Structures are given as C-alpha cells and as structure tokens.
Image (tube, rainbow, N blue to C red; front, side):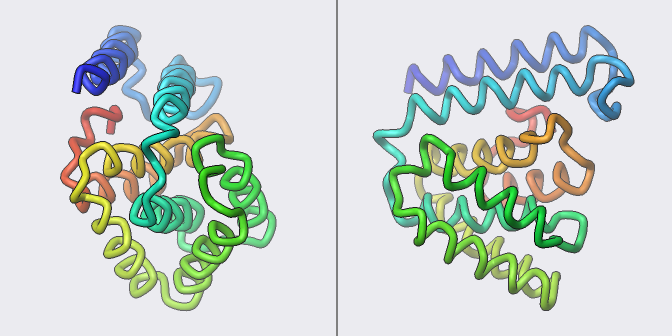
Length: 182
C-alpha cells in the first residue's frame, strides 16, 4: 500500500500547487495555469498507471476501462466518427491497455459508444454498471478513473462534461474525486 500513499502524495502536491496558482481549475487552455496543472496531473496519472501495468490484467479492469473511455468520449452527448477513432487509437496505444488484445478493447469500447449514441441515458447507466464492477479492488477502481482521466486529458483540456462523468465514475467506484482534483 506504500505505493498508493506515494501516488496520493503526488496528486495532493499537484492539487496544492494548482490551488496556489489560483486558477480554479476551470480555465480553458491559455487562460491561466489551470490547463497546465491538469496536463501535469494527466502526466502523473499516466506514469502511475504504467507502474501498475503488471497488476492490471483482469477482465473487470479491461471492461470498466472501456466503459469509462466510452463515457468520456460521449460526455457531451454525442461522439462523431473522428472522435471515436481518436479515442480508439488512444486506447490501443495505451501502455497499460496493451495487456489486452486490441480487438477486445475496440469491441467493448465501440459497444458502449454505440449504446450511448442510441440512447445516452440508458447507455450511461449500462456503462456505469460496468464501471462499478471494478469497485471490488481499490487499486483497479483508481486505475479505471486514471485511465478515463488520461483519455479525457489527451487533448490538453478536460471539458466540464468529462469532469462530470469522471466524478460520477468515482462515486460508482467508491474513489474520492478529490484525489483527482475533481
């Protein structure tokens, strides 16, 4: 558990430095330092995930992560083909997710995106149920949120709608949203 303590300290340090700069964390890129702090946090989360790669091999983590990625992609209520392809490529290139065959990842991600596109509320409910299955193992639960955060922040900005689904995933997984600056 010492590793998670170290991770929490890193995240806390980032949150404190973010707070000290006083941007409130909701600025768009270029309007203060909020974007930079989120980008820093995404970088830290990415390296934390990489350090857990050997432990993140369960089907529950895989399935919950794909549901999380689909929710992040569809957070604004729709997913255009370019966005779907972009997130799919982030998934397949993600170091930790390379523990799983790319076809499995694509299939699960696209299944959730399709459901979200057909009926957002029903698709969201099903995705959250899938995400909640990872709550049994705290390390995997945090890794699911980290994966969502990394995908959401890949463009250098985490939109309010993306922050909202990340917060809801934290609730479903019994993970503190404060740990991620949400």
